[in-house]
Image (cartoon, rainbow, N blue to C red; front, side):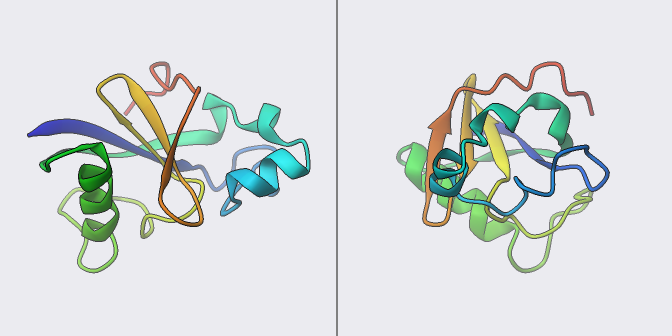
Length: 110
């Protein structure tokens, strides 16, 4: 079992309009990667996941938040632009799958 933390872009975050629900390709193409900062994100859930590898664990997290949501979850279905922190690495939910990105969310509280 691995612990993970799920973050989603805050509704009232300044500058979130261009980022929310956008793929990494879109952000790179439109030179918006520098706007992908910790202050855009809010913590929405902490839990555990299991799997053979990181890809399987991330897929488990994605699927878990599509239907009936876990108790204590206060966000929307996991979507493009959401991030998961697991084992000290940050993963961005992209159009298809997850991509590791360099974004430190340790300052974003619960």
